[in-house]
Image (cartoon, rainbow, N blue to C red):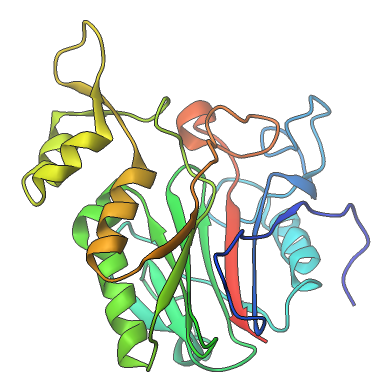
Length: 262
């Protein structure tokens, strides 16, 4: 039985033709028991829905929030130790591990197994195939995108039998708030010159750009055969009363994006 508490806000993907047998949502920062600076953003200093165990929040508080989350899921999520890399794991196998595996994406073809990633500006990408037989979740900050986390997730899902993949781009920092340096610009344009369209130079700051994670992700997804791509209309940094943002607040909580086969 889940502990008593507020009702978390759950953001449902606006999939383009997703199968009925797939469950998925992302959380916001509201509806939990965390106190400031992990609160709900309303100014109350309380009711935050922080799910990040390494965020600095009290572990007991995070566990309480995770129990509130569990009430909306068929099983405990398969948490990852996210390292901004490109490793993908089979969530059904990782569920039995003593410690969360060091990985930034997971997939499953087993019903009831919940894939999850945590974010607070990085891009969460949820995947399913049109038949509803394989699902996946990827943590895609700029380092993960450049390293190939989306390509690796797609390949792992296809190896598990997925065909005709769909993707949903969850809450991430938006293109007007994500300032990066020349190193990030070079990391993407060197591998794909078309990526330059995702960077806008910052006025009077040579070597500084505003980067569009959503645009970069769409390029990669389309190049890897994903045609039905939804989401991408959020900005964690500018929507302070709805989302945690590391860029905005530094000391902050984490949201979860989750998917499973029913």
